[in-house]
Length: 96
View 1: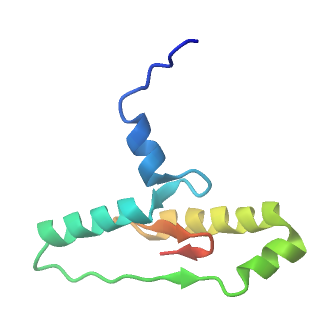
View 2: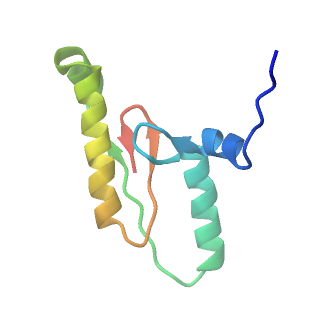
């Protein structure tokens, strides 16, 4: 049996990255927020959370592929709008 060599950062990427939306996941977001607050104590910041109501219904009626496309589109828009800044996909239907 061959052993696979792990590239540096591969485990960290898997632990902290949301593959679908191409952004941080909730654990990485929490680390980023703590680091930002620590390094910018006098700066004002705000946080927004999107919770897509009845997202399971969207997946059921339109299909999971369409639901995934909606999440990817939201992440794409946030990437353009939030500069500098960061966001994550917290759960299946929560992006913030």
